Length: 532
Image 1: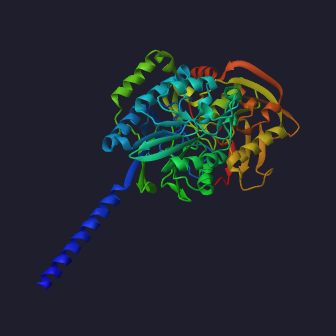
Image 2: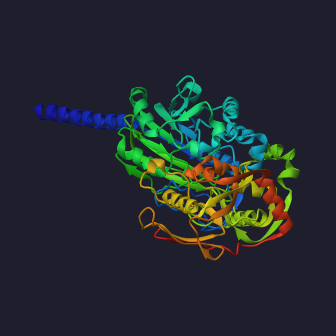
């Protein structure tokens, strides 16, 4: 009898223990949450698809960390109709309350239809996709501050930047530094940080009334508030990968940095000091899916999946496609105006000589009878191939600048080239801005292994060694006079002639006159050594 009682008690204890284990297991499962962060960045007005060439990096900027990006294969890629299909597919497989959709900025300008609608076409399409937040990138002020404010009112989602300060109120633009968004019972604090050097990348008049502060100090300022109100902290950053890396290393308590500006695809995700860094390339070519694995309201790990939106892999969403067609209808004649035929593919590069920019500077040099011609170099665009339409050219020269000529001494030209060497490999990542200064007419060697003042050598103009005292005629555009990318020498030139000739329309006209366009014969004027 006593043995029976003992056995009974033992069985009861075992059952209780098993029950307890099951209960604990259930509790542990219930404490694990998964939140999916979908993110895009640096769309640059690319609402429609484009053709990408394998190995071409039409959208790389200079703020990366030796993470040179190229497309994995040839093919049509991107566009909002394919982004929509990918987003809908992912949302349909998840709990609808667990998906967060973010954009990293440089979103609505830099395209002909975007210019015509002043960004409205992109913001309206984003509204249809139900974005949760967008950080303001440096090109999101291209239409002026007032237009940025109008687009913020048009958006169904917050467009914010904690380090863009209203000069009158000394508060963040739109009076909201961050947003707390609840997904799957997890409070997610999203802190948007703009590009610290925005004033060096565009027209200063477009930014009157605001100032840009360092992202590092801004994050440190708001982090205590975010910790008190959030379970998970995401910095939505337009600072570029090189600075995002510094942020992760120097600041404790950030779970995830969703990056932008440098047009990187970071795979595997960068991790430092407990912070993950991700980014989704650019031009609406990729939708990034970052899955947050959360236990006890703390980030345990992440899974990433980058969806390259190739036409042979993703169909276009019919509803979004109809919206795009409606927007294009009124302006179709101008958008699709025939320009010329590209007999060879002509793409864009940023950290090295760019075929398209070489074509433009060659035209400028010839038409303006100058010794040398310069373009600032742009970190986004497309590859011209076959039939070229007006909107293709505007995708590569998106800003309405005027042609100017001026005189610079040989010494000033060397200073320009030294600045471009600094832009390519700066010791101070916080002050890095821009890539290679694009040019025609000047032949030189750039060696990044040398010291300041010795990086540029063997410089020739018109087949002769550069004369430091001689004044050379230079052709460029009006944005250069504003010192963009730290090229201050243009404003110091003499005999500055400002024309009323719009660069975009001028290049369209000249390409129409050429009829057939080939790969520039003067590629190779710049020899680059030890760039990595």
